[in-house]
Length: 259
Image (cartoon, rainbow, N blue to C red; front, side, top):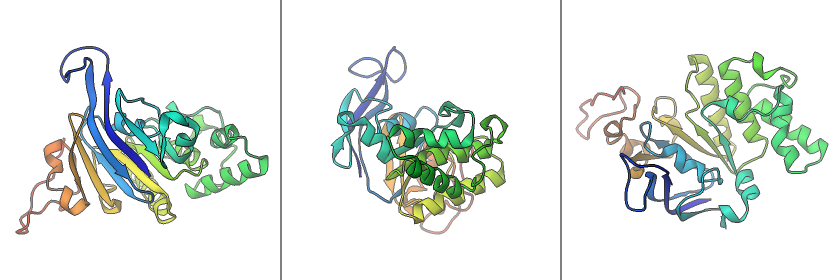
């Protein structure tokens, strides 16, 4: 369980978005609980605060006020536990790669947990199999396609065996086959019991997988509802939804937004 209670995050400087307390507010007094096993979509336009919010889940961003707990423990009290329980996949996978080869990169997190070689090998193998990259451990990351790099980044998070897997705009720059592959992998992880949090401005790939959609606007929660109830309000947040998903109660089609 991830519990966010009254979290506010500011960045230094002045200008649009500045509120009492100084700085530019990225996340504004947000409270949110993410149960184990939930598939949550955090949606919003660029600059809405969604990336900053999810980075508080495992201490990559420290709130200016409020608190975040994972499995009942404040994140700041045990960063290792938080980052083990909440695996993060960045929008640009190369920002998190630390090794030249696929296997070495996926092994990095488990190695830092002090696990045995046998357990590390088991986790690496299972994580690569889960993203259809089994047998590719010796491949050089520099030689991979964009979709393959995304899958390796996901494998690196999965090797930590997290309770929650958080992915920031995981479909950016991917072609259709790569997108389908990532979607299929997320579906399987969710079925296996891993909580999944996808951060996106475009719900076309994940709306059908979601248990709940939280929409952010100007750092605040504007929508928090099951997908069928959330979609009517999402275009107003500059969020794209699948064609045909938007219908009013009378059944009339409402055009999908296309920011």
